[in-house]
Image (cartoon, rainbow, N blue to C red):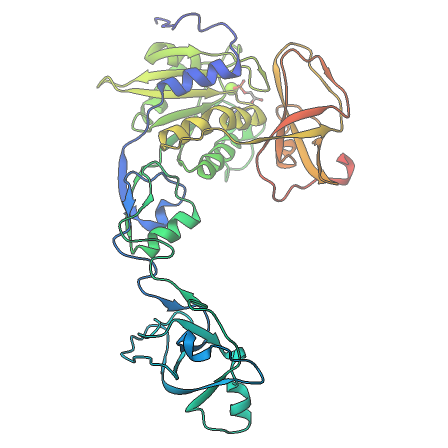
Length: 435
Ligand code: AMP
Ligand code: MG
Protein backbone atom coordinates (compact mmCIF):
# COMPACT_ATOMS: atom_id res chain seq x y z
CA UNK A 1 0.00 0.00 0.00
CA UNK A 2 1.35 3.44 -0.96
CA UNK A 3 0.45 6.52 1.03
CA UNK A 4 0.00 9.35 -1.44
CA UNK A 5 0.07 12.60 0.46
CA UNK A 6 -0.25 16.08 -1.01
CA UNK A 7 2.26 18.02 1.06
CA UNK A 8 1.99 17.10 4.68
CA UNK A 9 -1.47 15.60 4.99
CA UNK A 10 -0.82 14.70 8.59
CA UNK A 11 -0.54 18.28 9.77
CA UNK A 12 -3.50 19.77 11.59
CA UNK A 13 -4.89 22.54 9.41
CA UNK A 14 -7.31 25.41 10.01
CA UNK A 15 -11.00 25.30 9.12
CA UNK A 16 -10.41 27.82 6.32
CA UNK A 17 -7.51 25.86 4.87
CA UNK A 18 -9.53 22.64 4.97
CA UNK A 19 -12.50 24.27 3.27
CA UNK A 20 -10.19 25.86 0.72
CA UNK A 21 -8.68 22.48 -0.20
CA UNK A 22 -12.12 20.93 -0.57
CA UNK A 23 -13.55 23.76 -2.66
CA UNK A 24 -10.44 23.86 -4.88
CA UNK A 25 -11.25 20.35 -5.97
CA UNK A 26 -15.02 20.77 -6.35
CA UNK A 27 -16.39 21.73 -9.77
CA UNK A 28 -19.79 23.02 -10.81
CA UNK A 29 -21.91 20.15 -12.17
CA UNK A 30 -23.55 19.92 -15.57
CA UNK A 31 -27.04 21.12 -16.39
CA UNK A 32 -30.41 19.41 -16.65
CA UNK A 33 -33.78 20.54 -17.98
CA UNK A 34 -36.81 19.83 -15.86
CA UNK A 35 -40.29 20.99 -14.81
CA UNK A 36 -40.36 24.42 -13.20
CA UNK A 37 -41.37 23.47 -9.66
CA UNK A 38 -38.70 20.75 -9.44
CA UNK A 39 -36.09 23.49 -9.90
CA UNK A 40 -36.72 25.15 -6.53
CA UNK A 41 -33.34 25.74 -4.84
CA UNK A 42 -31.35 25.14 -8.03
CA UNK A 43 -29.37 27.59 -10.10
CA UNK A 44 -30.63 28.79 -13.47
CA UNK A 45 -28.28 28.11 -16.38
CA UNK A 46 -29.55 30.48 -19.06
CA UNK A 47 -30.51 34.16 -19.16
CA UNK A 48 -34.27 34.52 -19.40
CA UNK A 49 -35.74 37.38 -21.46
CA UNK A 50 -39.41 38.34 -21.46
CA UNK A 51 -41.10 37.13 -24.66
CA UNK A 52 -44.07 39.46 -24.00
CA UNK A 53 -45.28 42.15 -21.63
CA UNK A 54 -46.47 41.16 -18.16
CA UNK A 55 -49.28 41.96 -17.69
CA UNK A 56 -50.05 41.59 -21.38
CA UNK A 57 -52.69 44.36 -21.36
CA UNK A 58 -53.85 47.21 -19.14
CA UNK A 59 -56.16 45.57 -16.61
CA UNK A 60 -58.26 46.54 -13.66
CA UNK A 61 -56.80 46.50 -10.13
CA UNK A 62 -60.30 46.72 -8.60
CA UNK A 63 -63.88 45.62 -9.05
CA UNK A 64 -65.69 48.74 -10.26
CA UNK A 65 -66.47 50.80 -13.34
CA UNK A 66 -64.09 51.60 -16.17
CA UNK A 67 -64.64 55.21 -17.28
CA UNK A 68 -62.91 58.17 -18.88
CA UNK A 69 -61.33 60.47 -16.30
CA UNK A 70 -62.79 63.49 -18.01
CA UNK A 71 -66.30 62.05 -17.47
CA UNK A 72 -65.85 62.17 -13.70
CA UNK A 73 -63.98 65.49 -13.38
CA UNK A 74 -65.36 67.33 -10.36
CA UNK A 75 -67.57 64.41 -9.24
CA UNK A 76 -68.28 64.18 -5.49
CA UNK A 77 -70.64 62.40 -3.11
CA UNK A 78 -73.04 65.36 -3.26
CA UNK A 79 -72.63 65.88 -7.01
CA UNK A 80 -72.02 62.49 -8.63
CA UNK A 81 -71.33 62.13 -12.34
CA UNK A 82 -74.12 60.03 -13.84
CA UNK A 83 -72.79 57.74 -16.58
CA UNK A 84 -74.49 55.26 -18.94
CA UNK A 85 -73.44 51.66 -18.33
CA UNK A 86 -72.78 50.11 -21.74
CA UNK A 87 -71.74 46.62 -20.60
CA UNK A 88 -69.73 44.44 -18.31
CA UNK A 89 -66.35 42.71 -18.56
CA UNK A 90 -65.09 39.94 -16.29
CA UNK A 91 -61.53 38.63 -15.84
CA UNK A 92 -60.54 36.37 -18.71
CA UNK A 93 -62.94 37.91 -21.19
CA UNK A 94 -61.95 40.20 -23.99
CA UNK A 95 -64.51 42.88 -24.67
CA UNK A 96 -64.96 44.83 -27.91
CA UNK A 97 -66.73 47.61 -26.04
CA UNK A 98 -65.44 51.10 -26.77
CA UNK A 99 -65.85 53.72 -24.10
CA UNK A 100 -66.82 57.23 -24.89
CA UNK A 101 -67.36 60.29 -22.78
CA UNK A 102 -70.30 59.82 -20.38
CA UNK A 103 -70.25 56.01 -20.49
CA UNK A 104 -69.01 53.32 -18.09
CA UNK A 105 -68.30 49.57 -18.27
CA UNK A 106 -68.76 47.42 -15.18
CA UNK A 107 -65.40 45.66 -14.72
CA UNK A 108 -63.91 42.98 -12.46
CA UNK A 109 -60.37 42.78 -11.05
CA UNK A 110 -57.93 41.42 -13.63
CA UNK A 111 -60.23 42.07 -16.60
CA UNK A 112 -58.62 43.92 -19.51
CA UNK A 113 -59.62 47.59 -19.50
CA UNK A 114 -61.88 48.32 -22.49
CA UNK A 115 -60.67 50.64 -25.21
CA UNK A 116 -61.13 54.31 -24.35
CA UNK A 117 -61.18 53.97 -20.54
CA UNK A 118 -58.35 55.45 -18.48
CA UNK A 119 -59.70 55.05 -14.92
CA UNK A 120 -61.42 52.36 -12.87
CA UNK A 121 -63.74 53.65 -10.14
CA UNK A 122 -64.16 51.12 -7.30
CA UNK A 123 -67.74 50.02 -6.53
CA UNK A 124 -67.57 51.71 -3.15
CA UNK A 125 -67.07 55.09 -4.82
CA UNK A 126 -70.25 54.68 -6.86
CA UNK A 127 -73.94 54.59 -5.94
CA UNK A 128 -74.30 50.96 -7.12
CA UNK A 129 -75.30 49.57 -3.72
CA UNK A 130 -77.83 52.36 -3.12
CA UNK A 131 -79.34 51.73 -6.55
CA UNK A 132 -79.56 48.02 -5.84
CA UNK A 133 -81.26 48.56 -2.47
CA UNK A 134 -83.67 51.07 -3.94
CA UNK A 135 -84.27 48.83 -6.99
CA UNK A 136 -83.28 51.69 -9.30
CA UNK A 137 -82.20 50.74 -12.80
CA UNK A 138 -78.48 50.15 -13.16
CA UNK A 139 -78.28 51.12 -16.79
CA UNK A 140 -76.84 54.26 -15.25
CA UNK A 141 -74.31 54.65 -12.47
CA UNK A 142 -73.39 57.59 -10.24
CA UNK A 143 -69.66 58.10 -9.68
CA UNK A 144 -68.93 59.95 -6.42
CA UNK A 145 -65.23 60.70 -6.83
CA UNK A 146 -62.92 62.52 -9.17
CA UNK A 147 -59.94 60.24 -9.91
CA UNK A 148 -56.87 61.13 -11.98
CA UNK A 149 -56.16 59.28 -15.21
CA UNK A 150 -54.55 55.85 -14.63
CA UNK A 151 -56.16 55.24 -11.22
CA UNK A 152 -56.71 51.56 -10.39
CA UNK A 153 -55.29 50.38 -13.70
CA UNK A 154 -52.33 48.00 -13.86
CA UNK A 155 -50.42 49.05 -16.92
CA UNK A 156 -49.39 46.65 -19.67
CA UNK A 157 -45.76 45.62 -19.05
CA UNK A 158 -45.58 47.37 -15.66
CA UNK A 159 -44.18 44.21 -14.04
CA UNK A 160 -42.01 43.00 -16.92
CA UNK A 161 -41.55 44.75 -20.25
CA UNK A 162 -41.23 42.61 -23.39
CA UNK A 163 -37.59 41.91 -24.29
CA UNK A 164 -36.26 42.71 -20.82
CA UNK A 165 -33.62 40.47 -19.16
CA UNK A 166 -35.68 39.10 -16.28
CA UNK A 167 -33.37 36.52 -14.68
CA UNK A 168 -29.65 36.07 -15.21
CA UNK A 169 -28.05 32.67 -15.61
CA UNK A 170 -26.49 31.83 -12.23
CA UNK A 171 -29.54 32.99 -10.29
CA UNK A 172 -30.78 30.81 -7.46
CA UNK A 173 -34.42 29.87 -7.97
CA UNK A 174 -36.44 30.71 -4.85
CA UNK A 175 -40.25 30.82 -4.70
CA UNK A 176 -40.50 34.33 -6.22
CA UNK A 177 -38.21 33.40 -9.14
CA UNK A 178 -40.35 30.30 -9.75
CA UNK A 179 -43.42 32.55 -9.82
CA UNK A 180 -41.82 35.04 -12.23
CA UNK A 181 -40.80 32.20 -14.59
CA UNK A 182 -44.38 30.91 -14.43
CA UNK A 183 -45.68 34.39 -15.28
CA UNK A 184 -43.58 34.10 -18.46
CA UNK A 185 -45.22 30.76 -19.21
CA UNK A 186 -42.04 28.70 -18.71
CA UNK A 187 -42.78 25.11 -17.76
CA UNK A 188 -39.33 23.59 -18.36
CA UNK A 189 -36.18 25.23 -17.04
CA UNK A 190 -32.44 24.55 -17.45
CA UNK A 191 -30.66 24.40 -14.12
CA UNK A 192 -27.43 22.99 -12.67
CA UNK A 193 -28.26 19.48 -11.49
CA UNK A 194 -28.25 18.44 -7.86
CA UNK A 195 -25.25 16.40 -6.69
CA UNK A 196 -25.70 12.77 -5.70
CA UNK A 197 -24.06 12.35 -2.31
CA UNK A 198 -23.13 8.79 -1.34
CA UNK A 199 -23.40 8.24 2.40
CA UNK A 200 -21.60 5.24 3.85
CA UNK A 201 -21.53 4.39 7.55
CA UNK A 202 -18.62 2.38 8.93
CA UNK A 203 -18.15 0.40 12.12
CA UNK A 204 -18.48 -3.15 13.41
CA UNK A 205 -20.75 -1.85 16.18
CA UNK A 206 -23.21 -0.09 13.88
CA UNK A 207 -26.44 -1.81 12.77
CA UNK A 208 -29.25 -0.72 10.50
CA UNK A 209 -32.43 0.80 11.90
CA UNK A 210 -35.41 -1.54 11.75
CA UNK A 211 -33.28 -4.44 13.07
CA UNK A 212 -33.55 -5.62 16.69
CA UNK A 213 -30.90 -3.96 18.83
CA UNK A 214 -28.19 -6.46 19.78
CA UNK A 215 -25.69 -6.41 22.62
CA UNK A 216 -22.66 -4.26 21.86
CA UNK A 217 -24.38 -2.59 18.91
CA UNK A 218 -25.77 0.87 18.22
CA UNK A 219 -28.10 2.03 15.50
CA UNK A 220 -26.79 3.81 12.45
CA UNK A 221 -27.99 7.33 13.21
CA UNK A 222 -25.29 9.08 11.19
CA UNK A 223 -26.48 8.03 7.76
CA UNK A 224 -29.90 9.46 8.54
CA UNK A 225 -28.84 12.77 10.08
CA UNK A 226 -26.36 13.26 7.24
CA UNK A 227 -28.85 12.30 4.53
CA UNK A 228 -31.39 14.70 6.04
CA UNK A 229 -28.79 17.48 6.00
CA UNK A 230 -27.90 16.72 2.38
CA UNK A 231 -31.58 16.92 1.46
CA UNK A 232 -31.89 20.24 3.24
CA UNK A 233 -28.89 21.59 1.29
CA UNK A 234 -30.48 20.57 -2.00
CA UNK A 235 -28.39 17.46 -2.69
CA UNK A 236 -29.62 13.93 -3.41
CA UNK A 237 -28.50 11.58 -0.63
CA UNK A 238 -27.79 7.96 -1.48
CA UNK A 239 -27.59 5.84 1.65
CA UNK A 240 -25.07 3.08 0.95
CA UNK A 241 -25.43 0.97 4.07
CA UNK A 242 -22.80 0.09 6.65
CA UNK A 243 -19.30 -1.13 5.89
CA UNK A 244 -17.53 -3.24 8.47
CA UNK A 245 -14.15 -2.18 9.85
CA UNK A 246 -12.01 -4.05 7.39
CA UNK A 247 -10.23 -2.85 4.30
CA UNK A 248 -11.78 -5.38 1.87
CA UNK A 249 -15.40 -4.68 2.81
CA UNK A 250 -14.89 -0.95 2.93
CA UNK A 251 -13.14 -0.98 -0.45
CA UNK A 252 -16.03 -2.91 -2.02
CA UNK A 253 -18.59 -0.56 -0.46
CA UNK A 254 -16.72 2.53 -1.59
CA UNK A 255 -16.50 1.24 -5.17
CA UNK A 256 -20.28 1.05 -5.18
CA UNK A 257 -20.36 4.81 -4.70
CA UNK A 258 -18.04 5.61 -7.59
CA UNK A 259 -20.89 7.03 -9.67
CA UNK A 260 -21.73 9.59 -6.95
CA UNK A 261 -20.62 13.21 -7.22
CA UNK A 262 -19.16 13.11 -3.71
CA UNK A 263 -18.75 10.33 -1.18
CA UNK A 264 -19.25 10.87 2.51
CA UNK A 265 -18.24 8.24 5.04
CA UNK A 266 -18.75 8.45 8.77
CA UNK A 267 -16.43 6.87 11.30
CA UNK A 268 -13.12 5.14 10.97
CA UNK A 269 -10.93 8.21 10.66
CA UNK A 270 -9.54 8.59 14.17
CA UNK A 271 -6.39 6.96 15.44
CA UNK A 272 -8.02 3.71 16.67
CA UNK A 273 -6.75 0.33 15.51
CA UNK A 274 -9.81 -0.34 13.41
CA UNK A 275 -9.81 2.96 11.61
CA UNK A 276 -9.65 1.74 8.09
CA UNK A 277 -11.09 4.62 6.06
CA UNK A 278 -7.71 6.30 5.81
CA UNK A 279 -6.09 3.05 4.70
CA UNK A 280 -8.61 2.61 1.90
CA UNK A 281 -8.32 6.24 0.90
CA UNK A 282 -4.54 5.96 0.81
CA UNK A 283 -4.69 2.78 -1.29
CA UNK A 284 -7.41 3.90 -3.71
CA UNK A 285 -6.66 7.57 -4.11
CA UNK A 286 -5.04 10.62 -2.57
CA UNK A 287 -5.42 11.96 0.94
CA UNK A 288 -5.39 15.74 1.11
CA UNK A 289 -5.69 16.14 4.90
CA UNK A 290 -7.12 14.31 7.89
CA UNK A 291 -7.01 16.62 10.89
CA UNK A 292 -8.61 20.02 11.29
CA UNK A 293 -8.04 22.44 14.16
CA UNK A 294 -11.62 22.36 15.35
CA UNK A 295 -13.76 20.88 18.08
CA UNK A 296 -15.72 18.77 17.55
CA UNK A 297 -14.53 17.32 14.25
CA UNK A 298 -10.75 17.15 14.52
CA UNK A 299 -10.41 13.78 12.73
CA UNK A 300 -11.79 14.88 9.37
CA UNK A 301 -10.30 13.42 6.23
CA UNK A 302 -10.56 14.73 2.70
CA UNK A 303 -9.21 13.11 -0.39
CA UNK A 304 -10.12 11.72 -3.76
CA UNK A 305 -10.77 8.20 -4.94
CA UNK A 306 -9.54 7.36 -8.41
CA UNK A 307 -11.87 5.35 -10.64
CA UNK A 308 -10.50 2.95 -13.24
CA UNK A 309 -11.40 5.49 -15.97
CA UNK A 310 -9.24 8.06 -14.19
CA UNK A 311 -12.14 10.14 -12.85
CA UNK A 312 -11.58 11.38 -9.32
CA UNK A 313 -14.40 11.20 -6.79
CA UNK A 314 -14.10 13.58 -3.85
CA UNK A 315 -14.40 11.93 -0.47
CA UNK A 316 -15.13 13.47 2.90
CA UNK A 317 -14.27 11.12 5.75
CA UNK A 318 -16.31 12.46 8.65
CA UNK A 319 -15.69 11.46 12.25
CA UNK A 320 -18.06 8.80 13.56
CA UNK A 321 -19.35 10.69 16.55
CA UNK A 322 -22.87 11.77 15.68
CA UNK A 323 -22.44 15.45 16.57
CA UNK A 324 -18.99 15.71 14.94
CA UNK A 325 -20.27 14.21 11.71
CA UNK A 326 -23.21 16.62 11.52
CA UNK A 327 -21.08 19.67 12.29
CA UNK A 328 -18.34 18.76 9.82
CA UNK A 329 -20.96 18.07 7.13
CA UNK A 330 -22.49 21.49 7.77
CA UNK A 331 -19.12 23.24 7.67
CA UNK A 332 -17.52 21.42 4.75
CA UNK A 333 -20.05 19.47 2.71
CA UNK A 334 -22.70 22.20 2.58
CA UNK A 335 -20.39 24.69 0.80
CA UNK A 336 -19.14 21.86 -1.45
CA UNK A 337 -22.69 20.89 -2.38
CA UNK A 338 -23.59 24.55 -2.96
CA UNK A 339 -20.55 24.96 -5.20
CA UNK A 340 -21.48 21.84 -7.22
CA UNK A 341 -24.96 23.28 -7.63
CA UNK A 342 -23.51 26.47 -9.07
CA UNK A 343 -24.47 28.67 -6.15
CA UNK A 344 -22.34 31.78 -5.84
CA UNK A 345 -22.87 32.45 -2.15
CA UNK A 346 -21.42 29.53 -0.19
CA UNK A 347 -21.61 31.13 3.23
CA UNK A 348 -24.47 31.73 5.59
CA UNK A 349 -24.79 35.08 7.33
CA UNK A 350 -23.69 34.79 10.95
CA UNK A 351 -25.11 36.77 13.83
CA UNK A 352 -23.57 37.96 17.07
CA UNK A 353 -25.10 36.96 20.38
CA UNK A 354 -24.40 37.43 24.06
CA UNK A 355 -23.19 34.11 25.46
CA UNK A 356 -25.01 33.22 28.66
CA UNK A 357 -22.65 30.42 29.70
CA UNK A 358 -18.90 30.11 29.88
CA UNK A 359 -16.81 28.10 27.41
CA UNK A 360 -13.29 26.94 28.06
CA UNK A 361 -10.91 26.28 25.18
CA UNK A 362 -8.12 24.05 26.40
CA UNK A 363 -6.24 22.97 23.31
CA UNK A 364 -6.20 25.83 20.85
CA UNK A 365 -8.81 24.46 18.44
CA UNK A 366 -11.78 26.42 17.10
CA UNK A 367 -14.81 25.39 19.12
CA UNK A 368 -18.24 25.08 17.53
CA UNK A 369 -20.54 25.01 20.55
CA UNK A 370 -24.14 23.98 20.16
CA UNK A 371 -26.32 26.86 21.31
CA UNK A 372 -29.96 27.85 21.45
CA UNK A 373 -30.28 31.47 20.36
CA UNK A 374 -33.22 33.57 21.41
CA UNK A 375 -34.02 37.24 21.08
CA UNK A 376 -34.76 39.39 24.08
CA UNK A 377 -35.31 43.16 23.89
CA UNK A 378 -33.84 43.32 20.42
CA UNK A 379 -30.64 41.46 21.33
CA UNK A 380 -29.62 37.86 20.65
CA UNK A 381 -28.64 35.58 23.52
CA UNK A 382 -26.99 32.17 23.15
CA UNK A 383 -27.21 29.38 25.67
CA UNK A 384 -25.30 26.10 25.55
CA UNK A 385 -27.65 23.17 24.91
CA UNK A 386 -26.60 20.99 27.81
CA UNK A 387 -23.64 18.59 27.86
CA UNK A 388 -21.43 19.04 24.80
CA UNK A 389 -20.08 15.50 24.35
CA UNK A 390 -19.79 14.73 20.64
CA UNK A 391 -21.94 11.64 21.11
CA UNK A 392 -24.85 13.63 22.55
CA UNK A 393 -26.99 14.01 19.46
CA UNK A 394 -29.93 15.53 21.36
CA UNK A 395 -27.69 18.55 22.04
CA UNK A 396 -27.89 19.21 18.27
CA UNK A 397 -31.64 18.85 18.33
CA UNK A 398 -31.90 21.53 20.99
CA UNK A 399 -29.56 23.89 19.13
CA UNK A 400 -30.40 26.39 16.44
CA UNK A 401 -26.82 27.44 15.89
CA UNK A 402 -23.14 27.00 16.63
CA UNK A 403 -21.25 29.57 18.69
CA UNK A 404 -17.78 29.97 17.21
CA UNK A 405 -15.00 30.28 19.78
CA UNK A 406 -11.67 31.22 18.16
CA UNK A 407 -8.58 29.02 18.51
CA UNK A 408 -6.66 31.58 20.55
CA UNK A 409 -9.42 32.33 23.08
CA UNK A 410 -8.87 30.33 26.24
CA UNK A 411 -12.00 31.26 28.15
CA UNK A 412 -15.23 32.94 27.15
CA UNK A 413 -17.11 34.30 30.13
CA UNK A 414 -20.87 34.75 30.34
CA UNK A 415 -21.86 38.12 28.86
CA UNK A 416 -19.26 37.97 26.09
CA UNK A 417 -20.46 38.68 22.56
CA UNK A 418 -19.73 35.72 20.29
CA UNK A 419 -20.30 34.88 16.63
CA UNK A 420 -23.05 32.33 15.96
CA UNK A 421 -23.70 30.36 12.79
CA UNK A 422 -27.45 29.92 12.64
CA UNK A 423 -28.99 26.64 11.38
CA UNK A 424 -32.64 27.31 11.59
CA UNK A 425 -34.87 29.56 13.62
CA UNK A 426 -37.83 27.26 13.94
CA UNK A 427 -38.68 24.70 16.56
CA UNK A 428 -35.98 25.32 19.08
CA UNK A 429 -36.92 23.10 21.95
CA UNK A 430 -35.18 24.19 25.12
CA UNK A 431 -35.81 21.84 28.04
CA UNK A 432 -36.71 23.42 31.37
CA UNK A 433 -33.64 21.81 32.91
CA UNK A 434 -31.37 23.47 30.35
CA UNK A 435 -32.74 26.95 31.01
P1 AMP B 1 -15.22 6.22 14.97
O1 AMP B 1 -14.93 7.54 14.32
O2 AMP B 1 -15.45 5.13 13.99
O3 AMP B 1 -14.14 5.88 15.96
O4 AMP B 1 -16.56 6.39 15.78
C1 AMP B 1 -16.67 7.31 16.84
C2 AMP B 1 -17.94 7.08 17.61
O5 AMP B 1 -19.04 7.31 16.77
C3 AMP B 1 -18.11 5.70 18.15
O6 AMP B 1 -18.64 5.78 19.46
C4 AMP B 1 -19.08 5.06 17.20
O7 AMP B 1 -19.83 4.04 17.80
C5 AMP B 1 -19.94 6.21 16.80
N1 AMP B 1 -20.48 5.98 15.47
C6 AMP B 1 -19.76 5.63 14.39
N2 AMP B 1 -20.57 5.48 13.32
C7 AMP B 1 -21.83 5.73 13.73
C8 AMP B 1 -23.10 5.74 13.09
N3 AMP B 1 -23.22 5.44 11.80
N4 AMP B 1 -24.19 6.07 13.83
C9 AMP B 1 -24.06 6.35 15.13
N5 AMP B 1 -22.88 6.39 15.79
C10 AMP B 1 -21.77 6.05 15.12
MG1 MG C 1 -15.66 3.19 13.87
